[in-house]
Length: 83
Image (cartoon, rainbow, N blue to C red; front, side, top):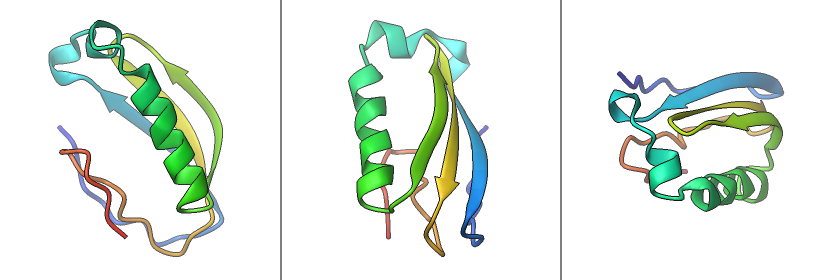
């Protein structure tokens, strides 16, 4: 289950994991990799954060994000990102 948690620490490295519903291979089935890479670009361009490393698997992904901004609320189960 997803958990919304506001992160208020800047200059930190966060480890994030996203899993697909029921561990289905949705990233592979839907060819979602391009959207994941676009999200990485958004995090870098809009929030000046850095993606330090990532692994995209067919049903989950792991990412290390260096957060430069003071407040990050870019979480949404529906995929909508807020400032």
